Amino acid sequence: MSVSYTDALSSYLGSLALYNEVQQSFNDWKAIISQSASSLFSENALWQSWSMWRGWQTWLETYCTSFINPDIPLKPDGSLNYYTLASWRVKAGLNVAGFTRKYKISEGVVGTAYGLCEDGDYIGPHLFNELQLGFGVHGDPEIPPPPDPPILQGGFLWTAVPATLTILTSAGLTVNVANQGSYQANGEAAMDAADSAVNENWPQGDISGGGFGSYCGAHTWAVGWLTQWNGGGQARVGVSTYNATATISEPARTEFVRADLWVMASPQPGGFNAYGANVSEGSCLVESGLAPDETGLLTSSPIGNLDEVLGGNGVAWGAKYQEGYDYGFFYGSMWGAGYQVTSAYFLIKWEITYKPSGS
Image 1 (cartoon, rainbow, N blue to C red):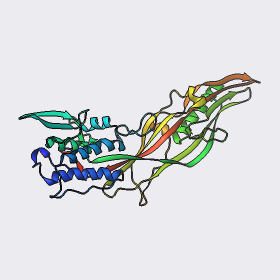
Image 2 (image 1 turned 30 degrees about the horizontal axis):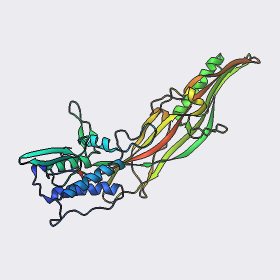
Image 3 (image 1 turned 90 degrees about the vertical axis):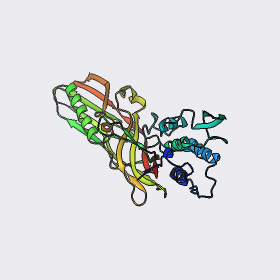
Image 4 (image 1 turned 135 degrees about the horizontal axis):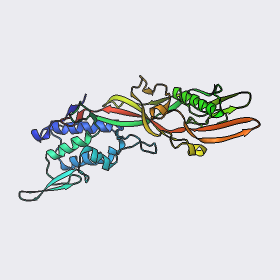
């Protein structure tokens, strides 16, 4: 479990422990992205040099972009949302121009600027505090009961690995419905049957002859008919279930906390776009709290109806595809829009040694 940094305002600034806490956090971050550890300081080391502070600051501003922003882990295009230097500064509570510098203007007059530490700058609590915030930026908010405000919980970092989706079951499903008295009613009953099939499974294309690949609800259709002899309806969907897998390795100097499966979905392109306006889309958390096995393999539970996870309800039906009367046969046909899973990732949460004081 992460422990709080020592408060630099109430400590002796020459304390070796203060410097080694920052160095330990530096090493924790480096471990996550497979960089070698730096040695902790000893009493005889040059551990109060201005260049040491500049080194920490430069490294943070360079490598903060290697970590995921857990507030919005996926961009609208389905790619991972890494911190930018600007967004990291905002999240850490730093000035938009960078770290605070304090320097002598004249006798008794102290100047303030922003950027990387320079030769001649004052070494003070502000340097410790801002590095502690910078290394602890990735905390989760703890939401206590109202009216208390959220509490920042530091000591965590987030990375991500692509997830591989694997078909567990896949088959074309045809549903027949009884005559409801009109071809319109028969068609509506067929659509309801298709919606039920979607809600119970995860339609993911690849129906024989459909050629739509990995599209949820692709090549879904329903038809209702009525003749002077009989009537009825029929719906067709592709029924599939999936799981997601990935292999991770745990850095020796940090502790795995959990993995969360996120996916990005978008409407099925091509001929169905005109009917896809109401298809739920966007990023969604499918499953949380996953852990790897002894080999490092992450495996999700079987994925069911993604549309329910995204807040939709069955197939997004379009306008009538065709309607008419032919040889005593009244018919109406409807086509349903699908959506595509454009990306899938496991977000990995790691716990590091220290967190900001007060979190």
